[in-house]
Length: 201
Image (tube, rainbow, N blue to C red; front, side, top):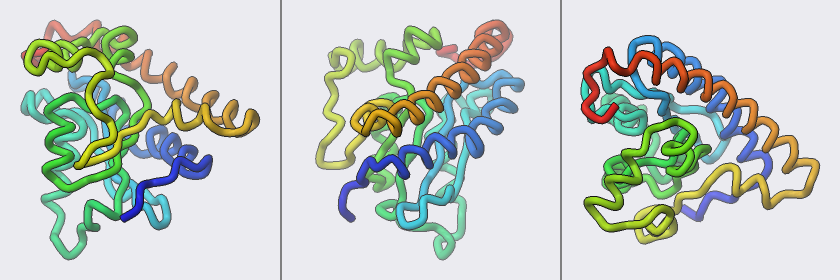
């Protein structure tokens, strides 16, 4: 399949999926003690949401939002499962090294995310993605290859900034509204994380 084109329609749909498909799941997940990360699979042909999930680390520390989504995807009957190259892998936050590898192993070649690794560290007080990249792989922030033999990964905000001003401003405003809702969820998670059993909380 050719690379996904970052058109205003595509970017708007990704933001809508975060708001309407992922965020409600994450609100429930955070109440249960989980982190704020979630993910969805978007059909490239009609931009519909095929499946959405959220972090489930209270069950297993491996169940990041992306990992939980991949688990649920592979639990679907094969005949009902669209091929990975027909889908956009949408992640609320730039996937960690574990999730990036899992997405590649699962055959997905297009990743889009709203919040960067630096956002996870600075705005969400969850620095583990960058710490693991540095400590294990000696990779500095932003230094991994987002366009490689397995996938191409891109920031939704960066894509929006490439459009004409009216489209750009509307999309970035939507992203800002989502960021405010995620900030409130992050505050809830941070206040309660001392009571959970997640190793890297």
